[in-house]
Length: 356
Image (cartoon, rainbow, N blue to C red):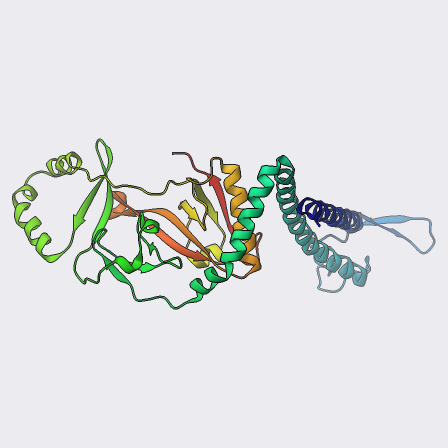
């Protein structure tokens, strides 16, 4: 069966499922409306001689079923009232579950429609997709083996002044431009640390670097003794006059604007406000539009979920320091394993296109 025919069958099956869920939802709505009508309607009581009638208060949805003296109300069927109320709460729970299933089904239907549209766009796109799929299948076993292999001990990176770890593909995790470097090329060292801090001053925010190694720290303390005795404005002017520029290898293409509690994303360490630099093999450099990035991410998710594998993710994170006076900007690496959880989707986070 061709991919286009398989996608069409999936679309048909998904539409049938959504129609069935919609019918169940309508049935629950009709039933709950009838229950509410009975519980909120005034009760008409006819005397024994059938000549006079009186009106009693309605049963109510959550009002007491006893009178002012604590006895069961004599003007209603208490057993009937409890049965209706119990069914009312059951329907509320079932209704929420149905709404969630319908919402997830609509998202899946939209994804299938996009995939079907891509399949029918051009023969060149079909061949390219087949080639990428075959390549991913060939490298799948090696990638899973690399992800599950024991990780070596962290090494000190003399270039960035940080302790870094090895990513599954052999690159350096936790630093900017680490995806282009090999972890094996790093040398061990126990001295030095480098932090990139964005300082907020009068003329805007600039990046500066501070070295905490013993020799450099003593030299810096000796040369800055006189400047520390001056005003704070002079120190801020000197910091702004000598900013340190850094080469950024990857460009952010999406911002994570929501992370749901107890989701795979939260468990992996992803936070709201993180700027997405790399999602598996997806970067801003190998895709020209955000729609193509979303489709590539869906492909990555499908492969990882089917094989119970993790996806390597790189984000840029800004952390406030010194009570909001300064900010630290750094690159974080995560291994995120997409999987079903109590919420929607496989990740538990929401992305939006990022424009600088």
